[in-house]
Amino acid sequence: MNHAFTGPSFTLGIEEELMIVDSEGYDLANAIELLLEDAPTGDIKPELMESVLEISTDPCPNTAVAGDQLRALRAQVRETAARHGLTIGSAGTHPFAMWEDQRIVGRDRYRDIVSALRFVARQELLFGMHVHVGVEGADRAIHVANGMRVHIPVLLALSVNSPFWRADVSGLCSTRTPIFRAFPRVGVPPSYRDWDDFSGEIDFMVASGVIEDYTYLWYDVRPHPLLGTVEVRVMDAQTRVEHTVALAALVQALVRDLAEGFARGAALPDVPFEMLDENKWLAARHGLEGELVDLPGLERAPTKQLARRLLDRAREHAADLGSAGELEGVADLLERGNGAQRQLIVYEANRDLQELMAEIVAATAP
Image (tube, rainbow, N blue to C red; front, side, top):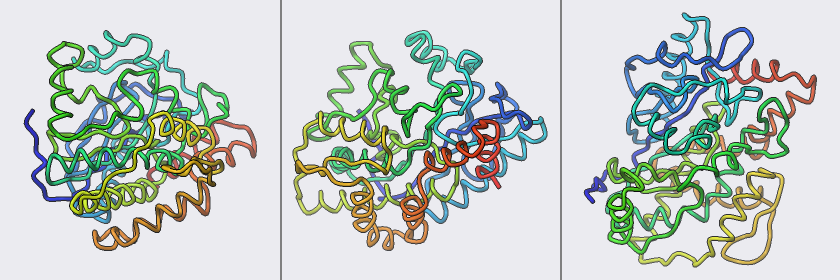
């Protein structure tokens, strides 16, 4: 398999999946074709459903540049939507939408996905954020992807932003996580020995006819050979752009930390898949308010404590990368609550989901 792991290292790209909603009642609107247009920087693209819009930055040197692009993209699609009586919102799920009311985008890839996965694809009314970080060297990219697996639960706990599903309180901080789990080839990925091992596994799956290419692996972390990046996909979409950018800064710093470890010949801890998966479940259920197993050990620790430790570990790298200021948005998530906590505070005042959506819309592109 060909790849583009040729550098420069640690460039950053961010993708956000946004809701297209009616500007009055805040119902989802099947209106993607009205919002597709060129952007001065970055890209505006469709996703699986006509009520979902994806924006993505160009490759950026740091989170300050990426944040400027994201703000401009959010503003552009908000203004375009407004001309059609629509607006945009960002969270991991829409609080009261029904997947049965959503249309599938008229593109071959998405029709093929629905044809293959049926109900599993149709109910995937979910919104995530993806962070790409450039890595130089194919074996280094595999090492980084393997190493990021242990960070998946903390990244999810910081980003949880989907406590509602189908007009009900789900009891989870990230309802998006178990809903998406119904897809094949998702969740905590396997580890690979090196690039040849990864490439051989993908070639086997393509040759067997079960996938067309590696982009049909929807794992929480994956190497992206075409772009030359490691892509982190576990996080819920963030309502406030500063939280999106902060999480991207954290991911960028952790990738650099792991890449430097590879250069030193540092070995990754041997952590059982089952414990990684269990920690991820605990993060989806409790967000920052629960406990995780402090891997590779056996002791449980408060999730906030582990998140603060990870933030401290990232600070020097973020400073070197020019992303230190944006990284401090992670501290805001720890001190003032993640998206799920903020949604529940708004909802509990009047138990009004339209009021909640109005708050989400207002904070998405102010």
